[in-house]
Length: 358
Image 1: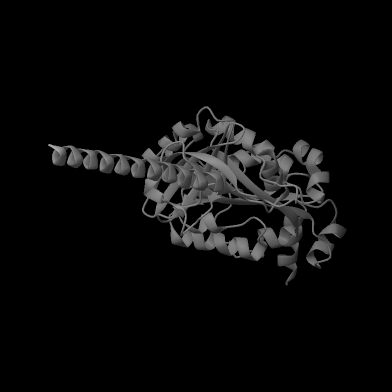
Image 2: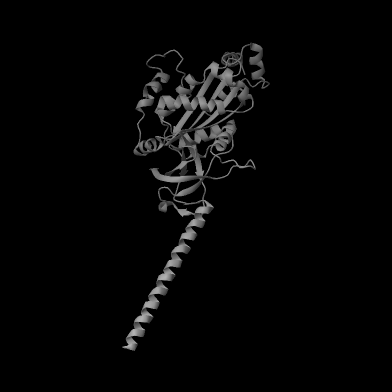
């Protein structure tokens, strides 16, 4: 590294650290000067990955990458992935499908405004423990107000990182553009950053597909929408296309991060053994979002809306008591069928007997 490169890196590091000594420690790999925040955001009928770095010393957001596409890669991402894994998934998602600039830009700029130094200072003790729950609450409220929707689900994870790794030594550099901070001074009309900003649509004008609009309608009246997985039962399950409104089906909530565990407890999914168990939802509707894209909605506990995603028709598990009730109804119906047959046979015998007497 020559003197000019070293000077440029130090200048960049001083946006995060307070002294040249701290900058030297970061350069030498002795100090991790930033928080690395990883978000998976499900917003109505869209799924995105957002990662950003926050200075531990200045409590400010340093840089944000926000990627919303219609790629199936987004649905497979897990927030506990490390820096290399999650950035690789971001690159894969961008290469697999067109970046939705409007919503990506909107969400990124919204996070810049929501994660203020005051918020960071209040939550730093939770972040130190790896608990992102308070941050998720702040972001969900901000997104609900800005996007005017309750159909929002955020999974989050926080760890320490070198801001140099996040901003310079990243595979995203020169391949995916970071989101410009709304607090930066306006650049000239011909600058690339301004061009991207002008392309991005404000939150209220982001176009909705028919599927998006139906998802929005379904979420009205519910306190919160929870993204989860259906429980599959290839043998005893209910066929995908035979589900009836109000039918009880099983869902499994995510249970990796502290925030996910807190949500699972709230909905009664955590048993006395401390493990995550399936919860029951009453089926409402399946919304087709496109090719190989099915969104299953059901009413869950505590005025919640459960939402699961499948790429193809499947057989969905039902509660054991429902399986038993179906068997009981079948047995009951079978009993009365046998009674009717026996009664008919008796009538025929009497009829034949009277004919013979005549």
